[in-house]
Length: 141
Image (cartoon, rainbow, N blue to C red; front, side, top):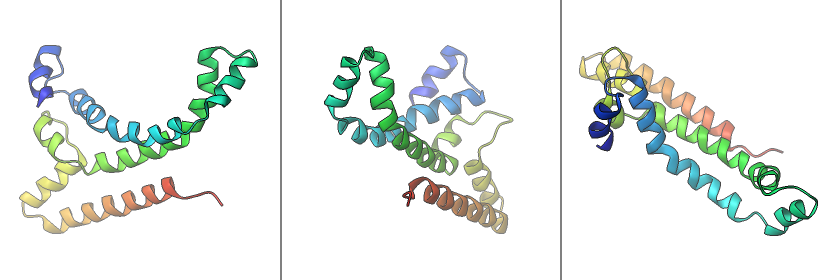
């Protein structure tokens, strides 16, 4: 709801950038949640060893903590992308004329009575979502 109030004041109203900004603010918590565990389990001794070896604070953060959190951030981003593709409520509220998201297109097909088209697109989204999440969460052997 904040985007509906804020968007006209900052010039984003009726633009695709508004939906992108709303998606980012809505789904950032999911990525942060997936990155929290690797960052909290990073031993402080690893960063201390990097600092003793001559690395600065930023370099130790990049070399140690960021590298440990990168796989979790990538898999979190994939899960967010798979979730955002089927998201409907934000898109319906903030949709601008001339732009359309996949969730709204499926909803419009269903409302227009084209149930087979809506079902086909829903199946494509579901299968691709399961495949992408399966690839992102698989364990290397």
